[in-house]
Image 1 (tube, rainbow, N blue to C red):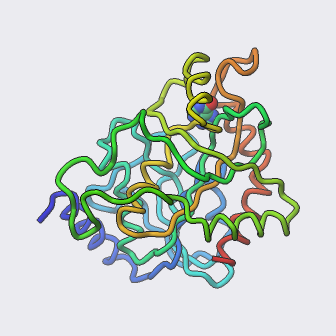
Image 2: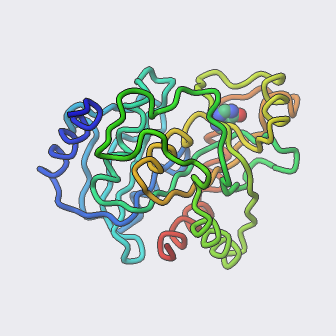
Length: 273
Ligand code: HPA
């Protein structure tokens, strides 16, 4: 058996010993959104550390567990804390939790993150609906022997972020009176923030936001046929766009400031998908 798939099956067995919950949708919470999971109708939680072979996040502000429950009667699994490539895990481990949620039964995936704005029209606190991504700066999570059980060797990536889900998100944001920007997300490895020259380059590539997560998860999810959408919280303008130096505290503070609106939007979106 393919070793990536074998590890996934072990993790799935580990989870199944604790819960038989079948989620319809999966949600990954980015910086500042972690406590969303505490406010839903929780049925069960499983700490990542309880799952054999599971990568455990080391970032401050990221909890490490799956929360199983209901949002507006939709059965969901929520990743409270994700793992990042910069923590030192191989890319296949970084996307293992996403794949695992897919194997648990989730057909739809909602990804959230904190990101730096590259587009000069953005201001900190904006939300950006991800329309597409650029992953040139990271290794593909699909490198290695292809787990045929999950998907094909050369998967199509022409609509990673589902147009159907994007339209639903726009509609729900409109109903809530939340203004929603749209754009292309670039994933880089981090952990250092980018240089001003890099940001100028990404802008010329057509990027609107930059971050250290999400696109790899979206790729792995598409590979296995999940329907994917993503929303960035623009926590800061990227390097060189203001005179300010970047730090994680600013990212956290902006994410915390708009978390209420972000949570409202996520709730309505889950109800509508
Ligand atoms: N760059 C990369 N990742 C980020 C940023 C940024 O400016 N802000 C939040 N995550």
